[in-house]
Length: 316
Picture 1 (spheres, rainbow, N blue to C red):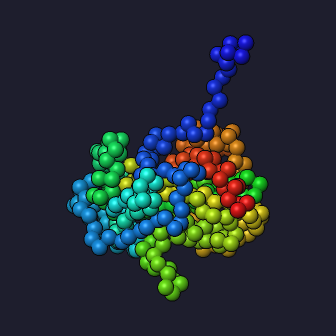
Picture 2: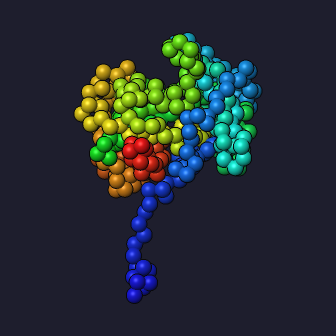
Picture 3: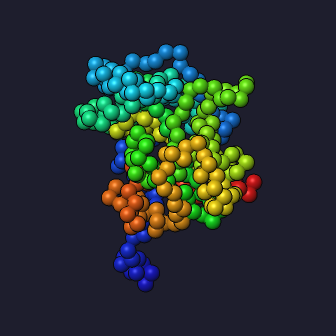
């Protein structure tokens, strides 16, 4: 009888059915609760020279770069130029190693703008990723930022959603699953400290955009790193759970450095119905009319994938 009934039962969609490649996201590395990225097993080096790139026409790209430079879009950031995955199958494979090179923010904007208007270049990058040449791309990539998204979960299992303001350079008015930040390559202000790695930029993201310090939340979990084929940016997805009530987080955010980037804030229950609503309707608007960033479905998927681990770490 059970076998017969199974034939007529409608399939239950799992939140993990979302495919990142559908929105142009291709993985460099995915971590799991069984193989997490530990803070003491990450190594970042700064390359002494920049690789040559053949993905963007140099004349057109340089023209765009000069335009953004003249507009004062400056800032010392880093872009990914090499990596070595921590597969944990050998002693050397216990560490996740990656290398970055210096670039200016206006160079990043030039790459994003160039690829936005050059469909052939985007297709070339997309094809390279689909054929597994992601390491080759990193070693010949045009300057483009490393960006992190940090999904923040409240004690009552709601995640913070932020609508980007009209003052930001990209994705104006779109909703994101938590704050986003770009990696910088200048040393921390604390004497003797090193340049920020992936965990460092995650902490700065939470501090600048939300106003929280490490004592306000549990361990940061980094679950996914890869490339966005549409912009050549390296994207990192992280999750964290705060022990502060939502009202206190809202109060902290109201005094944060990056408040100008947020137009609105909402706390959304983390459940499968809301997740699927956003994943299926992110572009045209969810059931509440919110239009989401293309990165939001994957950010939500990663938060769902690690939700149990976040709660277990809170008990440590």
